[in-house]
Image (cartoon, rainbow, N blue to C red; front, top):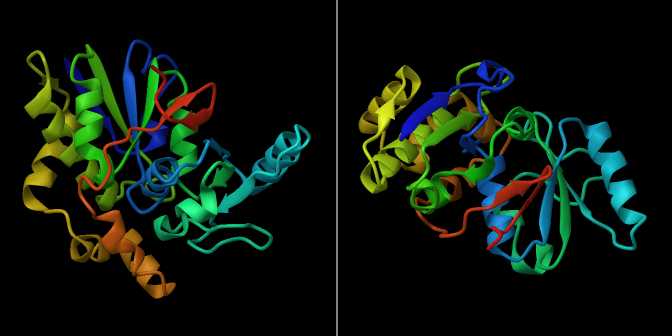
Length: 242
């Protein structure tokens, strides 16, 4: 198995992910929220890069007779008119069960857009790191695409990527060859354990604390809380098929 880590979506170039399973990571908070949403019964999550795109997409989907929930954040805060923000705790069974969600976030949904050239696209977080490793254990090529923060390296995502890398190495059906990014992420994971306190020490975590949303960090750090691996098909994230 070849295993690569991209620390920002901007590092992914056309054709890089062909023949690859790509695990998208935005630990604080988009992929954590997506995992919670799908685990709690959401029918699908439609990622959108911009707020305008999200509003248009919800209107298009509503023409089919249902009213999707509009979810996400800008600067950590739920935009006006949105049904839900980007806190994993909001995506409860009563809130999202049986519903379609249209989601746009500052960083995470951009990473899904960058990963569309992969053969498979998975939503990965601390919440489902082991399940992700199990899902790709027999693949020949795996990439972890970190959302980063404002186009730059983000420690929270890099550490999460490293814990995914470590889990993949433990479970892989064949020897694993790491690129430099995967090696660096693996080593970061050896230094940083998984905890809300660790996340609070990152730039993303500090921003959440300052916004009064620091309670999200403990949930985002709930390692292996879920055994589900949401996957994106034709730009729609849902439960794995077959």
